[in-house]
Length: 254
Image 1: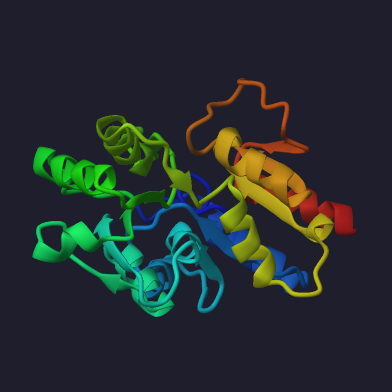
Image 2 (image 1 turned 30 degrees about the vertical axis):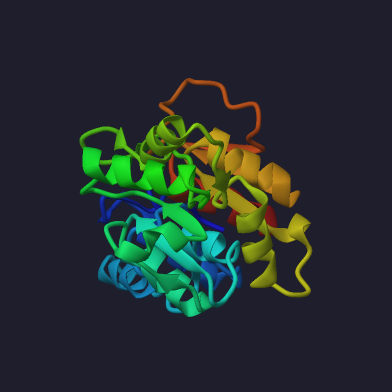
């Protein structure tokens, strides 16, 4: 189970060796799936971006947007602070998506928040107001930053924190490392023991704790938010990048 940002790519630019690493793992008979907290793109967009760097991924991507959608029921109403991935997942769940400036926002069951690159003060005002009027505050993830080739930028957690502060409530968070994402991953692997997973990530407070929740091994890479030399006690495998993780796993298999 591979994280995407900081493990496979940075801003959709392949980290050197990652496409070949995925190919080597699959050629050895290992199943490779992807679990991302990035709720902004649609699943097909994630799959197309992976295909563009040489990694076939159709049917192999799960997202925090899908996890947060599972916290709502068909027929409920939600407003979104985020991208198309959130809208896609909620609509697939049977949730009616309403704009924050819609006259019906008083009837919202939830405000669902993810990474929103067009976040404004007015977005904050409207979202916090809807939550104060009784809508639940649901978050796809609480990652404070998002890794890019030029360094970290504000992540979805920054938007969640702003709305939670303004509304005076604690959000319910669905993505890694929380239980809704674990439930989503396990539902996609029926009959597979969690101990058979290896979670590969760049962020120990997200991916490492997610591995602990699943009850599987955690492989830490140094191509995302944690530089070389910083201890990561959660990691059972600590490697420079995904290519090095693949070498460790394939060596173990003999």
